[in-house]
Length: 261
Image 1 (cartoon, rainbow, N blue to C red):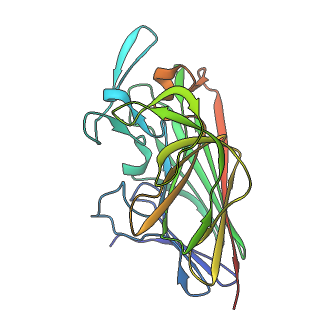
Image 2 (image 1 turned 60 degrees about the vertical axis):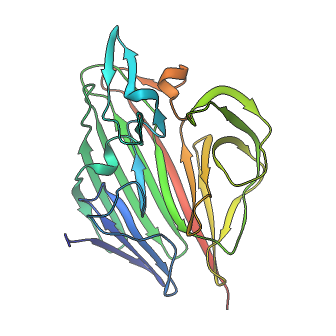
């Protein structure tokens, strides 16, 4: 297996895999694993906690119009493109220490740009900062993270509204009241801290300055709580962040934990 970057603080150990999309491959707290783990040969959509950049969620048919031309993306979920290129790219380590690492990568779509990650571990949290900088031309961006948490024994995930989906599972732009679970949906307006009791001893709170959240809790082995800067298919809905040449956008996610017993 390619080498991992190991971070340590208190009784927490985090493993980062630069070659596997710059993802967090493991978060172990007090000897208990919080994430669904994997290896570089496994399906990159389905493990760890990875950055979604330069788009998050589905892009309908891997296609959008930008600057008067069609931009085609690699399709990797049925007929659609999903979760960007960062999670399948090899990131370069630019700096690392016992409790932090910085990585960056060139974005492999036709609009260029670059992404940078700063991961900082403390005894009680992992703080992830993701920055995208446009290259020589303007670009639309939606960024976020996709953590695969092991199935919690309990959770508290409540939201004020949810995007209606069409028959292909892509948001229409209309907000509705959230239905009963299970979910594979995009939400706004959390009604409190987003908490998962991942193990009987370790509770996790996920926080972010992103204002959209996708929750995927259909698998029996995992629950994903994904902060995003916009909804899936944001560029086709006209709500992606637009960066002019050389401009940047930055978002952060904090995975914090408490232990008992």
